[in-house]
Amino acid sequence: MNKVNYDKELQSLIDENIKRGIKPKLLLHSCCAPCSSACIERLKEGFYICIFYYNPNIDSEEEYIKRRDEQKRLSSLMGVDFVSCDYDCREFYSAVKGYENCQEGGERCFICYRLRLNKTAEYAKEHGYPFFATTLTLSPLKNSDKLNEIGKETAKEFNLTYLSSDFKKRNGYLRSIELSKEYDLYRQNYCGCVFSKSKEKSE
Image (tube, rainbow, N blue to C red; front, side, top):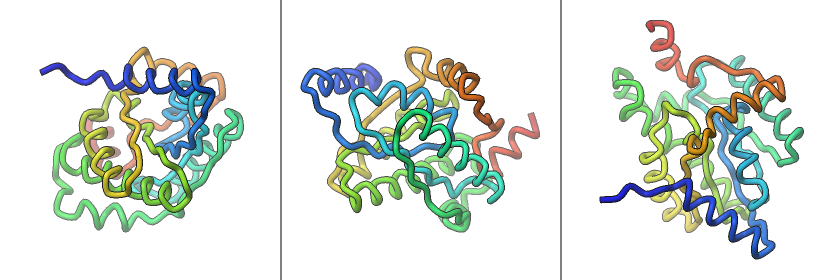
């Protein structure tokens, strides 16, 4: 069975939008400014982008605000809209209850993916965004296949279109590092949750 080339499919859609002279509205969930930088650059010619910052998995309000404000700054610099949700880590801890001891990158992370994509789709539906996507597939540590699977399932629930992606392709992650230097972005050294932070400290 051939593996789906999500990056090629997405680029074909972007190229088609450009050819037709249209820019549909896209709500792009973002985990942080550095990851969003390369994604925005790749998508902006084919879509009218609004960044959606919703990450209740982040381990402290201080860190949440720091990443949120940096994302807001970058959104302004790159000429895209921005919206964020209030910090409430209880949503995350409630969702992953019973999965605290799962391996990093496993079922607990999949639950977190679903939590954030569901909220993104909900906002997209309420505010007239026919497309939604996530920057999470840019990270080499994230499971793009699982993210796209969950995204498609969520899209069906809300009658929207999820943009499957694999933003790490074509040196996407490397480009995010370059753009982070260009925009002098704060780059955190862990995913965000207390579990990923503990893993980082133990290595």
